[in-house]
Image 1 (cartoon, rainbow, N blue to C red):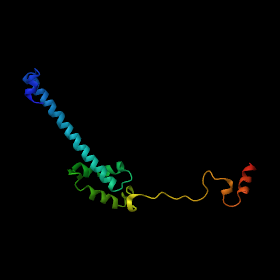
Image 2 (cartoon, rainbow, N blue to C red):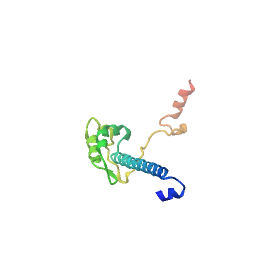
Image 3 (cartoon, rainbow, N blue to C red):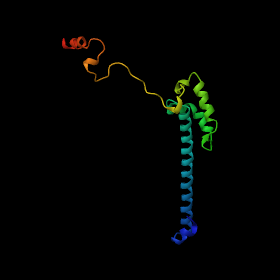
Image 4 (cartoon, one colour):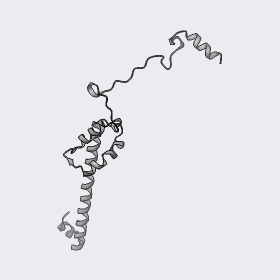
Length: 138
């Protein structure tokens, strides 16, 4: 929006100046919100890459560092080192997964053995009839 555009709409110089000032303030607020969103996203991505168990529990431990940190491209400068320090510290290390990820990044589901939940009495280990007779006595 330019002053000439506002003048053609019939606004006075004072009104045009007010509209331009308000538009500049809105643009600055939007730019600040976008910077904060990029910063927060970079912090979340770094915590996810470090395999934080609960990122919201780790953020307060990084509050002093994050208050002075700045976004450098897509990353927050020095954040990975600060997260590594927390992960290696015995007092805060429990907040991070330390097991190595298998190839491909997929974790194998556990294999359960034993009786399947809807098994017939014939598939029970041992004497299935004796097992069922115990219930019949009840």
